[in-house]
Length: 60
Image (cartoon, rainbow, N blue to C red):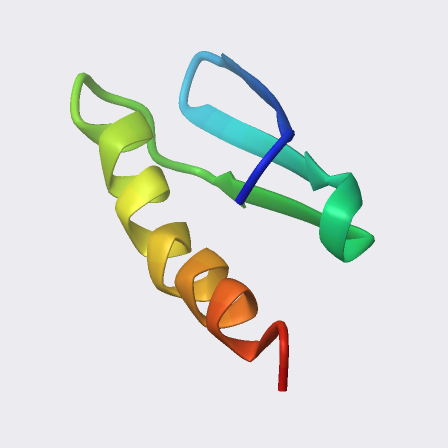
C-alpha cells in the first residue's frame, strides 16, 4: 500500500478509523457503535479486503 496515514479514535461505545492513502488518492473512514477489546482488530480485518482489492487493481 506504500505510504499511508492512519488515525484511530473513539469515545465510550464507539470507535472509528481514518485511512489516507495518497498513492491511490484514497480516503476511508469507518465508524462503529461498538467498543471493546476486539473492536479495533475487527475493523482492520473488515477493511483489509478493500485495500487488497485497490492494490490489485493498480497496473490494469
